[in-house]
Length: 475
Image 1: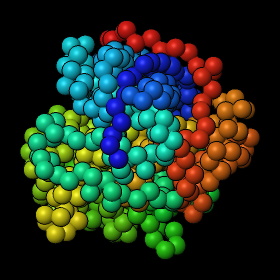
Image 2: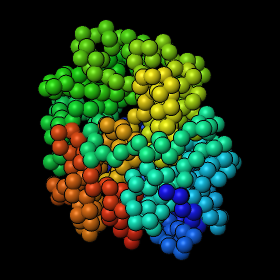
Image 3: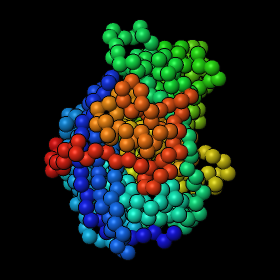
Image 4: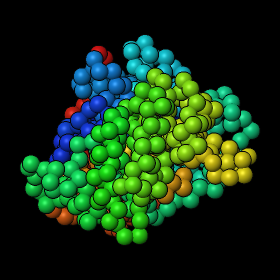
């Protein structure tokens, strides 16, 4: 397919509030509520065809920028500002491919973001949403599903000068090898304040949904887990032992990742935790089940020295340190073996890093480098579906999913919006406990319906339920 060129005619930004049914702690923040951002964009192809596309993502505090001097509201305003900058750049009237719009503005987005005090992870948030909305619009104009457009390189992906390490890479051949999945394992996150058993609770949410780790396992049948650690080795060991006591009862075994969320100052701290974990008989099965360790070191130090002493024992990946198109290349030089895919960091970055893994592994003759699929409290609807479509197309077989556990499904949305998503995606959603929510069976999500026209959604959110986003403020 020759990648169609189009002009971006309009980009509208909205938001609405999301309240959690139970608190979720990651790193230094305990989240109880946050706005969700929505993008609606209109494009017009050279032949006159026009279409609208959509995207959504939570405005999550204390992940993109962990500066303790900033409040949650400050973090929200940073992300809004990133969207505002990107909106202004993309509405330049130029005709280009979907990837071309991203590539032309990549450097200036970072430059303008820096001018407003935005770190690269924050600055990239704006294009991350707008690129998905534009790609959705392109797919709808072509009347094709996301996976067909990507496999035929209808987005025009050609990193060129942006990624010199991929010079000469055969993008059409690589993209043509990608295949959409109809099922993916859900990796359940155990947050730092999550109750493990009923003895941890002084009061219950009482909405009939699972609250403790024990109840989650019994209800959803998960076999993949993501375990948060807090940077205090003794406390982490005690908590991991209590988690292992629950997980070790799962018949047929389980797999897990360990998420440091930048809580360790350097590689020595996380290496000590791993050594002491392996010295604990009660953690023997859990240690054998861990497949990788995610971003344990603070981003200021994560790429300052090599981590081979740790990665020789267990694979280590970057997450928060993946703040540019070049970060994974640098991380590989230091001994990291993987990188996370998150749609909030950009779909093109994910595809570029996926290509790097393919190229490096082919040269090595073994699957040494890999990508994981992580979640930032993604909500049911557009955000969930686009993320699932992307990671499954890249061949990732399990994905961290926690939004369905911490939020009461679509209960806060209008009945019409809930029903629209249920009817469009009956394999992914179900109606239970008074609302439409994510459907998990035997620890997995069924996602065949995401192969619909557009970027993985056969339904649209209720735009009338949202408020326009104000993007002019920065802390």
